[in-house]
Length: 462
Ligand SMILES: *Cc1c(COP(=O)(O)O)cnc(C)c1O
Image (cartoon, rainbow, N blue to C red):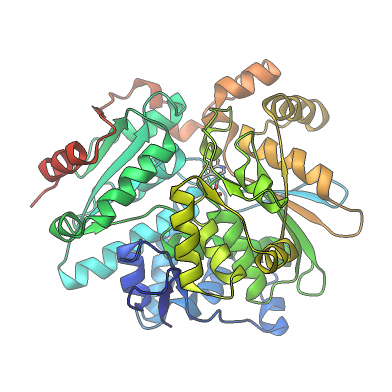
């Protein structure tokens, strides 16, 4: 299995190389050269299997010879052992034919743990046997950073530096990044928004001297390994509801387009998915684009669902690559136009996109209202991201097709928004109840790539 860049000029890489590098050297994102498919019989056999067994079947064809079967099984087992629920990703019925897929039982209470925990295991094995080391620099709107720090803390071959937008993450998110004491993990609070963090990260990747000097690696959702790990729960949940004999739809609270793109990969692999619904908050560039208004950057408006406060959705480039029939030149051209503010999607590509994805948005008021209605009706609390998706799913679903809505974080990760909507302050699960007592460690940094590079060179271990 080879991986090619969405901009068409970077060299093709193996799974291991694509995973360890993150962003392609032509600025593009790595995608598999071909998408392996599973037969309906193979999918049907997943019924009744453990999450780990399904994970093996789904991911194995993408990994090539990077890991042996037994190494790979072992990685999967280690990655999910620390989850707080035996099913890993349990499915809960909300209403007739509407289900919530709970993806928040991992160590940092957001779905990012599904990918990050296994990426941590894969990096450790791949680097350890080569006696190599890397510096992981990640940008986060909150949940990626905490999941990465949790997954990589204390690992011998990795230094981790996380950039988050100062003052724009929740206190639980910040504390999950700033309280681990291991000296290989560092939280940097950048003066700017998430798009600034992401842009500085790209600047660092595009400076090849710095990139090679510190052995820079990325674990943002642009990393193919992240997307791949997220394909698994589309299978487990759809099969639980009768796939492959029965079609299902998904609604996904979307920011960087990584999670929903994993749903698209599941569909391409043979899972019968009727509709993939992109749910956005008031930062709705994707919703506007999928409704024919072009892909145009606005300014980020901070919301109560901060992990989706994004104007440039990195993984959307992967969707565009396929919508433009894998024409890397066309994608490179679009990305040049995006740097000037935005672009129009061609008619053919729009058609390809809208055949797969539909979309909806939730305003701040609608999000709060959904959290309030939900607790009244079910007694359960939703995190604001999940509430955005529930609101949109209710608009989009029909009576015939089961709708699976992804619940991407635990409500206790966003207690202020949940309390404002319901009057109830969601408690942290017992295993992290002392989070507010642990000492914090963080550094404020300017939105300046040169200063950042100097700072990072000073942090990393030789
Ligand atoms: C990251 C995140 C999202 C958005 O996921 P993408 O893959 O970036 O689209 C949604 N909800 C929560 C809680 C998140 O942490």
